[in-house]
Length: 265
Image (cartoon, rainbow, N blue to C red):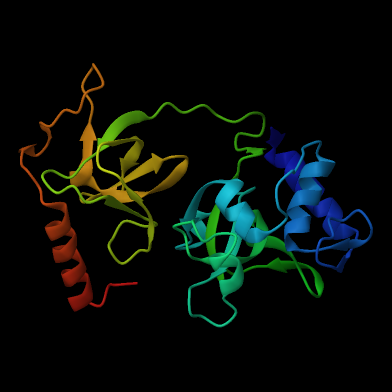
């Protein structure tokens, strides 16, 4: 694992060399692109990068938990941030998304990546066609998360033991939506088959819970989160007594309310 301090030192080292922009460049020959700034810094810090050199690949395979940016307060020093296009927006790379990532439930096109060097004041270091840049406002940055190769505590990856829970919605057998934020207006990251196990991170509010499912973080309605007893079996009494919930109907009601109030994303 690479410490945050060493990662940031290497990012700034490449930036101060003032490389020109070239797709595929990683700062080794006086050229660099946006993901090359990340890849080059990791390699200079003694790490390796064996996967594709691209923002879409990085967002889906090299980031541990990807979250929408609400404000500067959501960010942490050492995180990566990404810009994205939604399907149908100008610049959306439909060929790549429908080709290489056709099986990914995440349909966003992550087209640019940078590194958070400071939060207050905000400094986002990135490589653009004009050379190394610093952004001091959120602007078009949409998502943030931690690279799996970077140790968040500065030395080694912290070990966190989460409670194991079962994702289940009563009598309805339809899969449960895991969303990017706590509300039906946020995009669906993936569908979780009922009865699946997940890690419980915590409550986002009285209606939504934050979980980790298959290595990806997101939000599900708390009524679908069944906490386990000491034997690891679903404790049905943990969710409002023994109430049986029709998942599809409940989602439909929330979607309808969200639409009426103009809250749909």
